[in-house]
Image 1 (cartoon, rainbow, N blue to C red):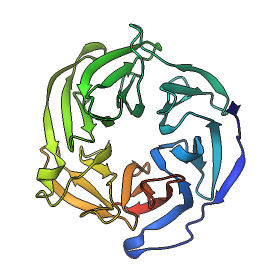
Image 2 (cartoon, one colour):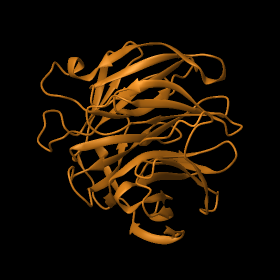
Image 3 (cartoon, rainbow, N blue to C red):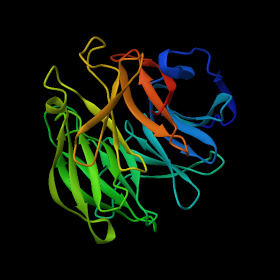
Length: 301
């Protein structure tokens, strides 16, 4: 059953609690928030356990769109003025009109390849969007990377990715970064004409970066205007070493600094337009519904 709840007030979003370093809570009652983006003066993010896309206007959080069974993990606006969301549970890319109406989804690419576990998005400068599909759970390594062109055509560009997750395009548009969560690493590809990918290689192993104190499960990745990569993580244990840390590295994979949050799971993030603030989707409850979490506003020092 499809549910449209546009305009429903979800929670008061005035930062109700301050933490050390100027960190504030934007939403104290988010249910597995993920895949955020700042767009037209609002922060849009999904709540996996509410099957919703939620929007924060600086004062309150409202459900913008919801669809039972979707299991969203990211949201992004398109060049055509619509929104897309990765429906991880229903193996589709949900399409949403500018006013929150449900449109026909994408379920496969032009060659008939199914979208198994769609996960995250990354736009390019040509009006196209890369997205990952994590593949089947378990030991199978069948994650993929797809490219949705501006004309609506979807093509598979990479396969055999281990639990494909976060994805980002470099500032010069020449490199695509892809997270392999269960592999604890980031891959990189050269970007060619029509969204093609080549020269697959290892960019960074998160376990090596953190001196192997424990497995790091990278999740989302975003790149700022300086070309620095911000890597979120979603640990398997709330007491895991280095839980709650977002790692910031340069284009050579060197660790520059860390952002530390009060919640153990910090899977994804988005920048404010001036990049002085990082909005972090976070989890306190990692292993069962409703996956209680928060959305934070963090000064970007």
